[in-house]
Image 1 (cartoon, one colour):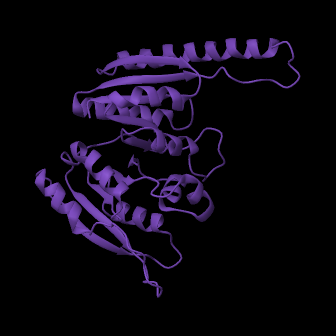
Image 2 (cartoon, helix red, strand yellow; image 1 turned 180 degrees about the horizontal axis):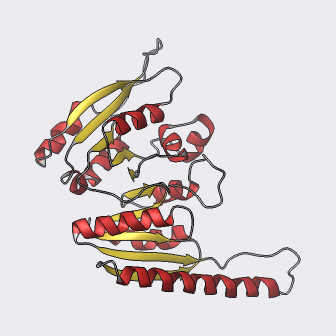
Image 3 (tube, one colour; image 1 turned 120 degrees about the vertical axis):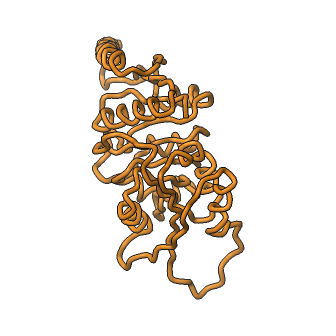
Length: 276
């Protein structure tokens, strides 16, 4: 993971994801590309002549320039290689254009304007648009040690396999790799045919890359979600981060019916390594 794309925006998660990007760059001898999007496409009610909108654009540009100067001063003292990518418009557009030639995208786990304990729409949009893996960093993170134990959340779906494959460079550095799945009570009705991969398959795949792993099935605690069960399992194993597939179903379906990705993104305690 030598090519790191970092989302630049001053929100509660910025310092945490900045430190994560620095840690990855140092450990992998990588380069950080700072992606800064400056909004410009908006309107102000009753501003018929565009005067207020023009003033707001100037203010946004001023704030963005000040942020860039401050971050560049910090980067000069961090001993890592970096560059800057800036454009007007939305951050998803800029990151979507830059991500294809980056190994990983580092973003915050929370949306700046979302209600507390709600899943990040920004991260959700990126997982559907970007093929590079995404590290979603919660605000309390202090960095990312790639040699720490790692938990891989496994449900046999293609998204889990994509995330596992994308994480191989990081997993090869981990001191321990734990592949965790969550068992649920069997339903009486006949299950539909699926293309799920058995739990031992990821361990065999990692072994081909000389990565040892342990497989465990967690019983879902009554009254707890799958996401909560996985998080408890990860914390018990002192995991530094969790690898998981993102949005096996559409985000709309998960917003209505619920889903593991949605639950994990509501208030994660650890960084999430996501791939769709």
